[in-house]
Amino acid sequence: MPGVLPYRQDLSRAAVITESAGFERALAAAGDGLAALRRARDDGRLPLLTLPEARGDLAMIEARAAHHREHADDVVILGTGGSSLGGQALYALADSGFGPSGNAPRLRFLDNIDSHTFDHMFRSLDLARTDFLVISKSGGTAETLLQCLICLEALVDAVGRENAASHVTVIVEPGSNPLRHLAEAWGITVIDHDPGIGGRYAALTSVGLLPAVIAGLNPAALREGAQQVLHLSLNTAIGLDTSEPALGAALNTAPGARWSAVLAVYADRLAPFAMWFRQLWAESLGKDGQGTLPAPALGAVDQHSQLQLWLDGPDDKLFTVVTAETVGHGRIVSSELVEDDRLAWLAGRSMGDLLDAEARATIETLAECGRPVRQLHLERIDETTAGALMMHFMLETILAAHVLGVDPFDQPAVERSKVLARAYLAAMDRH
Ligand code: PA5
Image 1 (cartoon, protein in one colour):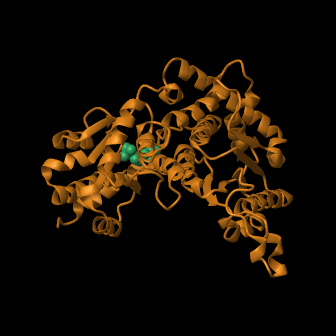
Image 2 (cartoon, helix red, strand yellow):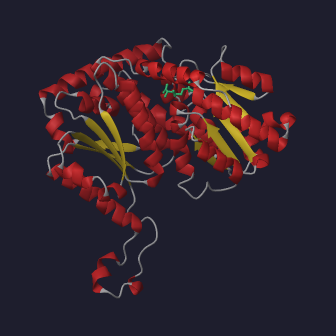
Image 3 (cartoon, protein in one colour):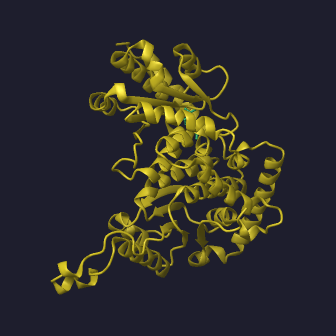
């Protein structure tokens, strides 16, 4: 097991937090959290911590992905929250907006219930060449069930009742639940959602890996990256200060830490990752009056949108800036095109050069303004790094919850709104 991570965490510009006495106390509490995680891994209570070393399920995932790659030009993923965002984050590694490479189908994640979007999809896609992944851990989420029923009906219209099931895969936990019953009644292939891994922690299970493999990504490399982070955090022979997630958890929870957690990613391919982080952080920590507001951002775009506020607005934000090696990447501006002296500074520069310069300038300017900044620098953006980053933030979130004294795995407050929505729907006239 290599002892080096595919990213580097730099806290040197967050000294306003890390040099406080409160930081040491928070780090010690995060260390207690690590010990609790180690025990949970050893007695098998937290399957998330043994998942990265598992390879036994990958053949099944690859076989089902091969079916959809063969069968479809478009694959629509139905599901919401943790059943969608991890897949979206991984898919972005294969498709930054112009379709995946090779012969992979184009994936579309529909996580909302906006009828305009669905009507447009039904008009735009050839359903005879469209497959659906329906993902819900509980099998009882209203949005996903309604999406599924509407898509099944559209499929029947397009390909007939007898052919519809071959267009669909359902991922749902075992036991009696409406989605599982529906799938069984229709003869749809079902993959078991691990009941021990909650929605927002499920990106490296079939929930995220089936979409990823359909798009042509390497699932073993994703798990390998996650395993590297786990190893450096949970190996008892290794000290607390080598656990990058524990340091991150302390940074976010020390007294004097900030009210917002900005995650600014300097790569289009990581923009959905920042949205995945937002849900993980908000739903896991926002309890009992605790938690901080996660704020995803995209560099360099947000320099023209939010940077003014970051630099000169309230000093209530902790900045995490994710950068990758980009120097020399992309096309280079030809000096022959640059006749105007005012453009001369761009001659011989690549797009990656400018992105690197802008990311560094943002980090330095924030630091000069006294804003706490952490940098996570990636050697490259690939499956290993994505798996590592996902495990980093899952552990950081769980450890932050430990320091704050909240349960990172539940979301009790949202239940009331679900009950009310059902009551309002029941009170409406049927069409
Ligand atoms: O992270 C979570 O647990 C939630 O965000 C769920 O993923 C979301 O509510 C969807 O639930 P389900 O997968 O049961 O449909």
